[in-house]
Length: 296
Image 1 (cartoon, rainbow, N blue to C red):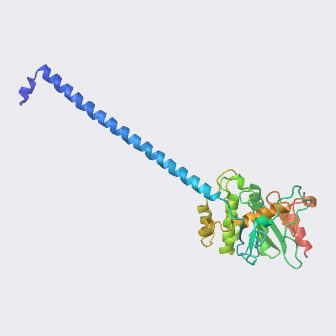
Image 2: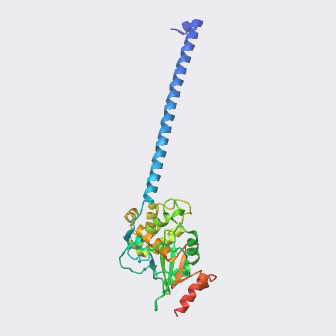
């Protein structure tokens, strides 16, 4: 049809064409709206599935981390029967004999707090450096504060051969995280004591430096593994995943309760508890120096 003929279209024809165009536009819009609704619907479904997967992973991880722990288990190499790893000069640690511990063999905490807490293995030994024994919890903010204030002095005296420093990590504050972080961190530390004892002090420093807040989930097991690697320790992945030393941590925690330890940090210097009785008002550096002086 020529332009001239198009100009001669009747009004009815032009109206019909306009209606047809409108119909086609309307149908195209309806198809577009339907397609968008489908895309939105599938997007919502995908988002819900992703959320469910994340929730499932979180629940599975939490259940795994909070799973019951065996009552009996091995001590780590370089860990003593009271849950401690003793730091000597520089990166050396005290050697220990392998053993098996079982929390079921220990008594429960006393109903009445003892007048004096006696920590096994913390007593003075003639001709030996002063023993500093620290009951700690890796999520305990007061423990972190103690380390911040006194670690430099303790390290200097240790390197001079005047003292030894023994850490006994506990699971006292497991309830302050949703994943039993205290015990998980203590297990990771025991793994390093077993695999790379010369990196133990560095890991303890790192655990306090990166201490999570109470009430949080704490540091994940994967990040604990990375922290060990970052301080130069061998891979502890299997040890962490298998919870190898969680029974050891449980034993240490129950023994601490049984002797009357009620909080962390609890500090002993040659068997005498700092901050109690006669030492209640004595600054820790003075208390420690007095013990060193007494050794001559």
